[in-house]
Image 1 (cartoon, rainbow, N blue to C red):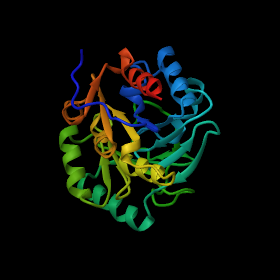
Image 2 (cartoon, rainbow, N blue to C red; image 1 turned 90 degrees about the vertical axis):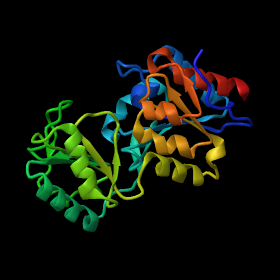
Image 3 (cartoon, rainbow, N blue to C red; image 1 turned 180 degrees about the vertical axis):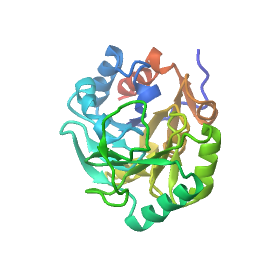
Length: 272
């Protein structure tokens, strides 16, 4: 039996907010049959499911086939709100040009071989110097300050230093000019505009609907989930989570491969 960090929240939970990779999704990146059934049962009982993820919008279209025809995703570490049924971005919170241009210039000065990519509502662009192990073909980004939509998430990599040094240098250069999230991709710096995090994105979405932390149970596995778990009325870590997340969570459930989030959804639906 996994340990409980606190009593399960009393009252009626209205929102289940969950990270995707490493949390709701199995290690193979799919939604299990049990999890899909639990999502449907939660929806039928009146519980809204919000997927809160570092994934950009372009990595969410396939989600429709797994979770049914409802739901919303706060993605890009809080930069975008994506309507799952219609596969459209309905809200975007990105860098202004005034913030982005000096930030990129200062990072180039500190790490001359750094390569950048930009996640936007309409897709991703990258420089030739940005090497991505997950996908080879992207629209090239000729000028990181000129895009058809605001840059929601700025990505950076460097081959000249080890991952630990890279993240330290980036953090020192960026300071408070951007939020730096760690979703588990080693050697990748993920930056959003100041104040844009999973927690702030979820809080804004809830506030528009008259909801607050007490209405929300949140589930996660990585350090970029910590602000969201702290904001929610009840924070849940899956058993495979990062040690910092396990230490901070109110409750620990089974791992992503053992349907941990599904068990939470089932319990919430039964309570309704």
